Image (cartoon, rainbow, N blue to C red; front, side, top):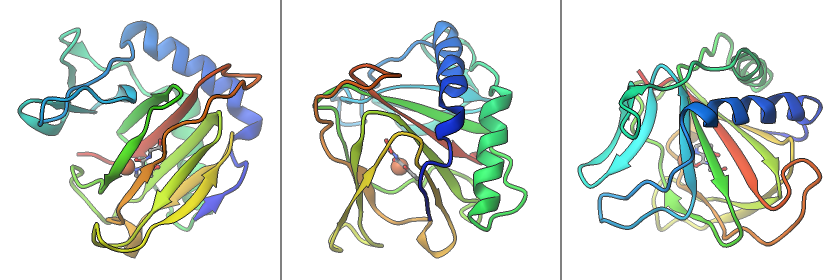
Length: 194
Ligand code: MD6
Ligand code: FE
């Protein structure tokens, strides 16, 4: 479910919290199991963080770059995620992990499933901030045809139930200038990882 503009009125508070998190756990280009640095810069907050390196994808309670726990989830993050999930029909969603993605022009996320979480009955809540992007929404297999859905500043996608393992991705970001984020797009994806 796309909740258009659901987070728009809280965007500056959310972006201030992103800035606070990234002073403790900086954005970095993680390496895929195949050995290539990702074009999207990532960090996490919450009790678990999604990481990738040569050994694979996993959730880790410690930031491998600092050997410290990930920063706590900001209160405004958790509140938004629960409210959006409820608006999407998932009552009682309490995320324990938030992956924060930063896209610069040209950065992309190839088609993937989110399947490192423990409980596929829990939805994912995804928040777009800053520059627009084209979201690729496929089907249950990589071969299914893909729809292209523009995601704008403040949009929230709530994703669960039969759609939980849908293949998805983000097209290469186009150059732009946004009043709140200048030349980048941020995406917050909230999960129940553990
Ligand atoms: C992004 N989002 O929007 C990347 N995953 O930048 C995701 O990969 C994603 O938006 C699972 C559920 C929702 C998402
Ligand atoms: Fe994903």
